[in-house]
Length: 283
Ligand code: SF4
Image (cartoon, rainbow, N blue to C red; front, side, top):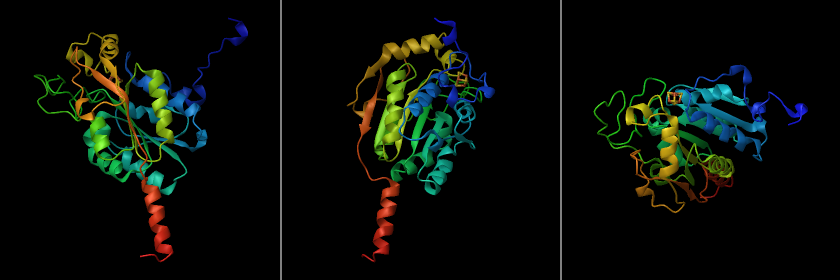
């Protein structure tokens, strides 16, 4: 390589706040890949970068709001969707993305999730699922698989986990996808599609958490978890969503794909139609 082409700049630097690095994530954590896919998708998005904003809550995924060089909001635990809702309603021209983990988005914030999907508010939800509360010590949450071990389920979890693509689709989300942090090209493309979709676009990102979840569940390290993703991943865009729950048991599949991509009037469209009707005095 010509010396003149060598640079200490990362291609994503324009969208990263370098002064905040090194990041706090553990070696082998999947959040770096998820962030990179988000940044890469923004770089090729039709929306100007100054119209992209990100909202995150609390947890390891919440750090993303501090690392990206766009307008970003680091909100309270479980509440990124309500915050993003206010932002989108007041500034509909913004491309609002919620970047959140399973403890934040669906365990603490579950009620916000189902109602915002039902309303079909035009948000992009990047949901990093690593099956536990990583930052606070590896406790179980609403996506921890049945029988999985965590610090608060040392004998195995006896609660059923949410199957998130099924839940999102049942709530009416017009775009529902799932990829792992190993599927970087497909994940980036799914995020690009989420930007385009008018309405609640949901992308589940299955991610290794070697420190919180992996070591409690017989994964030697992050590579071992990633190997499980590679060996277990089954791409099936037409999957029956009732069958795509994840066990994280070796030998069981992790079904991935762009499962739902349909047109459905967004909240904003419905609101504008109603206002027009009222102004015209129609019954
Ligand atoms: Fe990543 Fe888990 Fe470490 Fe958090 S605790 S940074 S999710 S590996």
